[in-house]
Image (cartoon, rainbow, N blue to C red; front, side):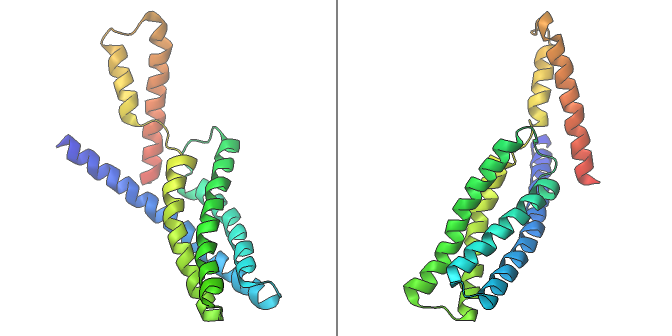
Length: 188
């Protein structure tokens, strides 16, 4: 029964993460499409270049949303590394997203306003799958799971830990308390 309960808990957390990612992502799509159409219709910039500019603007918008809303409870220790990885994976997403549009415009000659918006949207969709996976796996890493902390506590409690590990036990207890507090914050 405990395994089933844990599975439900994990699925509930994943659902919440996907929902938060979707909220930020939907706002980012609106920014992306809005900037794309604004630039495309108010300047002489070519379709794919306008799309790249719009994607860069939405990447900046999305970073703020992901860091401070979707993944606010994730590890914040290495912001430079986090931002570097975010930009790296976002650049790959940019290539995926705009590669779809590039293929439609220059491969098939589909460059009307409607066609460009459709393929821009399709490119965003394909790139979003990649971004969700890469951001949650590599960029906004989860803090150590409660189970790992509990295993460390059990190891130390059964007498196998050494005297020097007393500080480690205290740190494990504090980490467990912090993880429980974060989990409580998630549900409130």
